[in-house]
Length: 176
Image (cartoon, rainbow, N blue to C red; front, side, top):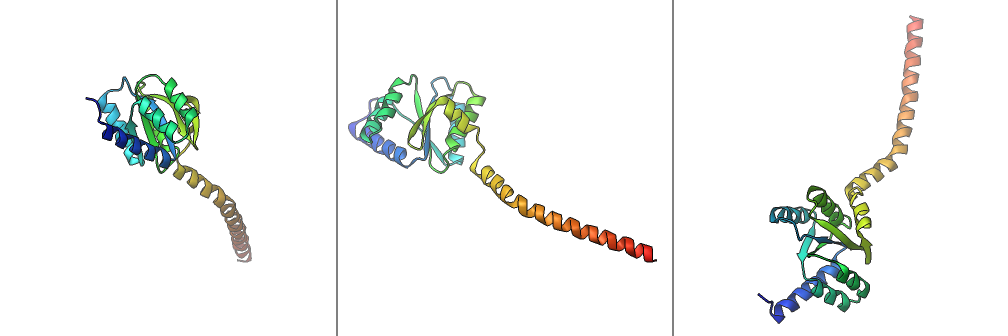
């Protein structure tokens, strides 16, 4: 059944809002994906604060042209198959990572490209981004790196103190 004009206007408004507030987005082709895998992907996306929207390419091109993303609209026109947009609102890498994991589990999910920092990223770049560790892991590594010199210094001081205690205990044994 065809959508009414009001439904299309609402869809355009919703899509425009999601595009403008998202930190990153990934385009996937889900044409040969069964519903169970698609629902699993949606659940994983919701857990990470992401959203999946299925839309017509003509509608997406219209929205992109309206907000001034003409180059991206041309790239969308070149995409074959059904298109789903994965929006990341909290973490820039989460949509890529989740889509990559879904791709490894189900090869029918095809990553087509994405947008990061208002620039189009090809499929290969999205795959590289997906293999980056999460933000929490990177922050943990940073804290560990910043803490390493301090803990090394503490261990060195503790080692000298232990050596002093050992020398004093040997002197005490000799005096007895």
